[in-house]
Image (cartoon, rainbow, N blue to C red):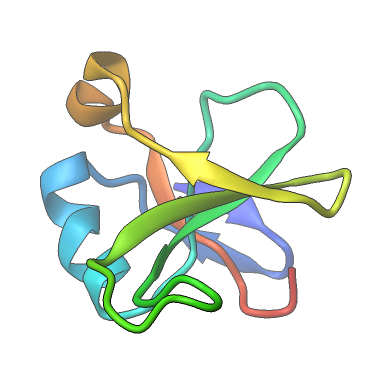
Length: 86
């Protein structure tokens, strides 16, 4: 179990966390040691009528960037759900 804020979170595999991402939850890997705060799904692009869902990552700088999981991310078992107030 990994402590996040005031709650304890069970570490999960990518297969376990993917349905939560699809449901709109924010998630992060505990193995990331940089400024990554969370990733989440986006359904639309600004100023575009049609788009497919995609993932973004938010960093400590406050910026969002497109996110594509690496092979290491897909096989990792250290994914946790992030509290909504991040």
